[in-house]
Figure 1 (cartoon, one colour):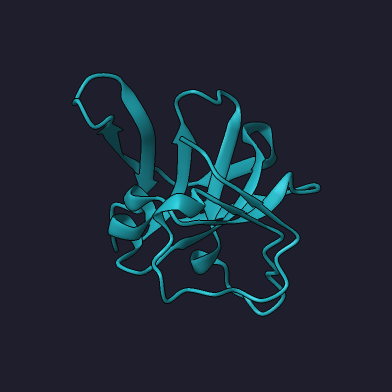
Figure 2 (cartoon, one colour):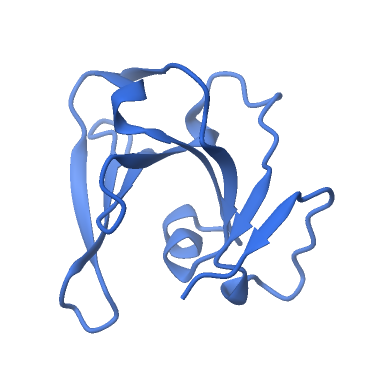
Length: 123
């Protein structure tokens, strides 16, 4: 499974939401936020639909590699056409520089990230 992400990103976001913490197994997830049209997949992904707290509407579609289980991309149901590619799956992550934090109300109390341009709290 390989992919290409072309063009300028909307943002490089650190997401502190509970869902990303659980999916990543860490305190947050680093995401390359882009338009769906910027992503070209070479191979098939499996999809897990995560539902809201009440188990009702689909909250996010988490797409992952069926061979190794690595999370590749998340599609937010309420933001059609916008995707979040997981930065951890890039071949070279050395130049990934987050510029926004989201879902900060779920941030673990011991997490402090230097140099963040914007912090957005979402409900």
